Image (cartoon, protein in one colour):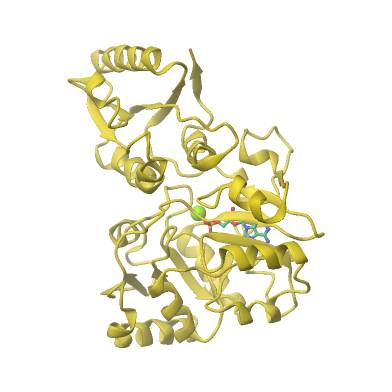
Length: 354
Ligand code: AMP
Ligand code: MG
């Protein structure tokens, strides 16, 4: 299959209406189109068509018990998809939609089991990226879209990342530039009336709690699960976001962390390993002579979130065998929780405590 790649002006997507119409035709005919959102690039198909859902799983190499998020372009499109919208769900929608928040509801029959990985619930998001909204509107149906990467690889935050993973596997990629937040959406389960955080993201736990009061956090968000334990968001159980290199997270006082990493990286290099260090603008100078990937600024965690997947992909491009990452403060709050959730998975929970 040849994959068409077409640019859209992210500020004024309707200037490229021919591209949107072409993409919408593909979706209406059961094909697959990758498109930008404010979080990461999504791999879209008709959410109401079981065959489209099957094609998404096949293109990603994703296990079919890992449900897809359904994207809508207006709040009015939610009602036909779900049984009930709880008062707290309404409050969250009022506060954060459109935006990087996915809500889980009990599903209606119109949503096929293939889209929800066999679950009775459906995850829905109304994104705020202008290209995403214009594309979904043109489709005229809700668009099921997981992240547009090969399963297990870091999520794509640029069209070039999507092309690297998906060229020849999907019909089209809409290139709308780089994604603003760079981490996948926050997921909150709203079934049963109360709220439970299933995946942390740019909408933080504090932001959610300001709107609906105290919320619970699924165990899979902060720690590795034991054999047999099941996360509420099925996707959280898979090794995710992984470059080929062995990743080690080093936690402790920053000075000690820097000394430890510099020493370990030197030893590994002497032993013939291609070694890299993921550092910040505050610490990069401590690693002279090493391959350093600067992920962002510790005083502006949003820069770290936005660059995280790009850096993990870069580890592969550089052919690194071993990568050391400095720890970021997670403290169960703020963006740190979302950043560390992704990093811990990338590292297979390999953390050195100093
Ligand atoms: P991705 O689309 O790659 O960002 O992954 C979608 C995430 O949403 C996965 O972690 C899924 O497990 C989660 N998800 C999708 N639908 C549901 C649902 N009905 N209930 C809980 N989690 C869901
Ligand atoms: Mg994903």
